[in-house]
Length: 220
Image 1: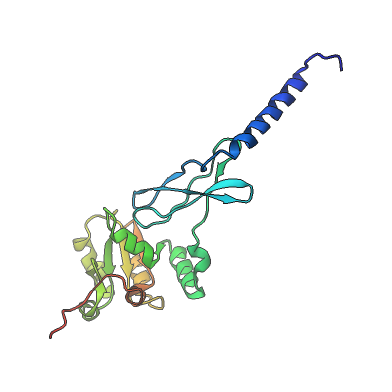
Image 2 (image 1 turned 120 degrees about the vertical axis):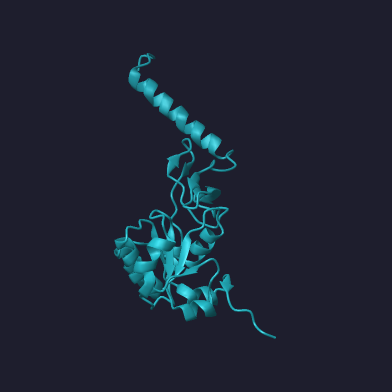
């Protein structure tokens, strides 16, 4: 030790000062900064800051449109980082719902929950929702905003009613046990439609959740 500064000691001193600064300023941070992501519906969402152990992280928050989206992982200085947090929906799925989701995605389509469909119907660009059940069923009750194209009529009717092959389309039928919606999605795909989603919960789940329906007026 002769008192002279060497490149090694300079680098070490800089690293030490950076570490001290990071820990010193971390306590003063009110939040982790802002993570922004785009929901499929096009709305922006902000991630709320939360404390997790000794570090601060940003957790995904609900968008104004009702969707949940993840923030992209990125650094926020030395003492703060944003990380992607998966939606809790996947862990809360029942075996029936999980199996239906796997089947839909294996067929190459997007699986929608009731909450996701409800949010999209309320967005500025709602999808075309197709009830593939019978005309009698549709007349008795259907999701508000849906049109009726029975499964047996999809092939001949869709090209006329749905001229835009890139439009977002959601098909649904009776329940998770009903296979008509997935069959309809397959037919639509063969016809050249590119943006198909399947709401597998169907009319049964939608009704049980008290979401908007259209029913015949009750005669007094």
